[in-house]
Length: 173
Ligand code: S3P
Picture: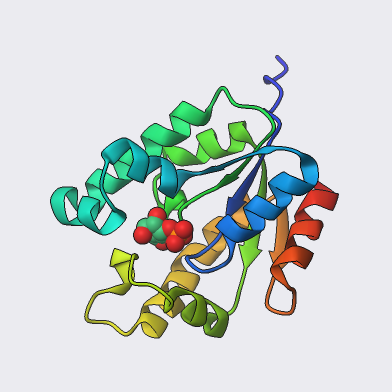
């Protein structure tokens, strides 16, 4: 049996601060696609911020909401979808991501991730005892192999502007 064709969306995966939202908006403009951002969808549906969701419902509650918005996106076409960095931590999400479309991993080194994520304080996973750099290094170790296994395309963004990364995504999609 032939599997159903993949939906024609572009999914951006990668760690916090890798530029998924910014690059995603550029890519959407380049391809004349719609833009969706799972974190924004979760905040809209919940009516409160990500730190508030973590405080009230724990990370588990947040992860349930994240899977729910992915399922909501299943019918969409011609969307660029920026995902939260932890979307690949839930096994149930992996086939959903695959089905949604072409997966691009935005890879970035620790320095860039630390710099970008220090701009605001809206990421509960970086608010713990552990310094953000140490936490991010650990997440690179833990999640890197999963991003790699999921990615149709990998873009090393350290020496690129976000516009250049977006051209890379748009060209190869
Ligand atoms: C998370 C990443 C965040 C957000 C939440 C958890 C993670 O999204 O979903 O704070 O587990 O890496 P960004 O990758 O857009 O920062």
